[in-house]
Structure formats: structure tokens, C-alpha cells
Image (cartoon, helix red, strand yellow):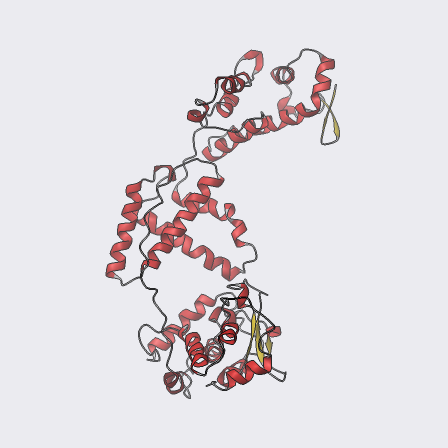
Length: 423
């Protein structure tokens, strides 16, 4: 008696894995084919063999005390029998015909119902008790499509706020199973954040990011693991106030403090050069940190840097651009023609290092200032000089609120415009 699976001939009794070689298993095979005729069995065997193997493997996977594996095995076994796994309360709502179809498909030796099949087809598998911390572990794999193309640094920066949000929730409510999270738990978490907003002068955006990241983790696990839970995640966000602006440095402050002789001598070379490169390019710190030698073009008529998605994703499609090098920014890039390997995979460490240095030496114009303010200073100088909006947006890597026509300004034109306001 020969069966075929994936184009290969199999002898039903000689090729069956040893764990399936038993009188009960052979009876199960005949029962599944709904015949006691060998000739009829051979006719039906083409697809039945594949279904049987899938079902057996699903059963074996379910032979474990690990709840997540048992639940997944029940779903797989139901699929192998031609059904979609439903919870018992949903099975109970099926039509009489559909319900009987499932009951009659629960097979077993000598017409005794197989408990694993009954669990799979009638919805008896218990939902896995996944804690919030376990949900985060599962999330990294379930949401891996969101990380495609990210560099190591970008992946770390994508993961960290999600880790923080989950840990904050656990600090408030404990590491509960996600099926036990209540509306009160979420309100307690919101109240904890409200206290922080009032006492630590944080913005609603900080709290909402935590709520969004936590919700994303829980909803993704609930959906992809097909748990069917109703999670209490709605109507808990804070009303966004006016977004806090990172103030620009005044040109007089930049000249008299930041680029004054010896002002940055205590800062490591790469961090110092990135700061100076920002002054007349307006580039983001992370964009400069990621530059490779090929993107730093000094031995040309119009020295420039090229922001491209080579070692990392760009913030947006508009972020791909070339920026002329002038003034102190050109001098800084000549000191680091190969880029900034120290910060190429850790731009967050760069900002922390520079901001700490500037604050410690009284080089921050106000407590609200940060390294990023140099980017806004560059844009303000372009605006004050009357540079066209299209060109300003091209230099800053911002999207244009209308369709872009033509190629835009040439590199020489950009150089002349930036040179006119360079420090």
C-alpha cells in the first residue's frame, strides 16, 4: 500500500515513523480514511497522509506542559483536521450542523475520542498565561518586520522606549498576565504618569509615548498569538499641549561661546567635530555620526556631505540630500575625513556626551538648550537671509508641502547661499 507525500512514495507501514507504528495508529489511519477497504484507502491516501502527519506532529507538539506550545499545537491540530481553532464559548455558538461536524471529526482508536483532538476541535485549550514581560520577549519576533533595514544603533533606539514603557507599567502594576490587565490597571498607570507630569515638568508627549508603546506590544502579541483578548487600552491618552520647542542658539552665543578658541578643547575630537559640523549644515547629529568616508567629499570644487541611507534608515525620504560645507563646519570635516566611527553606532551617546560637556562648562545658552538647537539656528539664519522655502527645506531634509518641480538649486548655488551666513 503506497502513499505519496510531496512527490515521494511512502509505504504506509514501512515508512511511518517508529513513534507512529502501533495497532492503534494503524486503526487511526483506517478511521481517518473512513473505509475498511484497502483499495479504497489507496485511492484516498494522496492527501490524507499529509493531513495525518501534520496532525500527529501537532499532537506531539501539544504533549507538553508549556501553555504557549499547547495552545499553538491545538490551533495547528485543528487546522490539520480542516477547521479553524475556536474557543469553547465560540464553538458553543456554532450551528448544530457545524458543531456536529466538529464532534464527529474527533477521532481516536476504537471510536474512543482522542482528548487532544477534542481539545483542538472543541476549543478546550487554555489560553496561555503570558505576562507583560513575556509579551515583550515575544514582541521582538512578532514585530520583526518593523526592524527591516535598521542599523544596530537604530534597532537599539527602537527597542529602548518599548522596554521602558513595559518596565514602567510593571513598576506600577506588577508583572501581570496580559489576560488579567484591567481598566483600573491602566488608569493607575495613567495616574502615575500624571503625577510625573506635574512634579517633573514633563510633557504629555512623554506619557503618551509610553502608552502607545505599551499598547503596541500588548496588541501585537494579542493579535499574532490569536488570543482574542479585549484589552483596556482606549481613552487613556493625555491631551497634547503645545509641543515644547528646542530653542535655537543665538549667533552671538555660537560665536562668543561655542566656537571660541579653546571652548571645546575638553571634548573628544569626534564629538567636537560633529558639533562644529552642525553649525553650518543644520544636519541632525545622528546623520553626521553615520557618515562614511565616501559621503564626505572634500577634494571637489564645492566640498559637501551626502546624507544617504547607507548604514542606517533615514528619518524620511526627504532626508536624503547634499549639504555644502562652509566655515567652521568645513574645517571640522577636514579633521575627520573618514567620518566618526566612535559614534556611528551610538548617536544617542553622542548627544549625551556633548550636552553634558556644554552644561558643565556653562556653554548652554539656557537650561532648555541642547545640541539639537544648532540645527534650528542654521535654519533661522537661512530664513533671516531670505533663502527660498524650497531651498531651506532641501537643506534641512524637510518635506515640501507641494509637489517638487525641477531639480532644485545646484550644489554651487547651495554653497553660495550657505557661505553667505556661515560662522
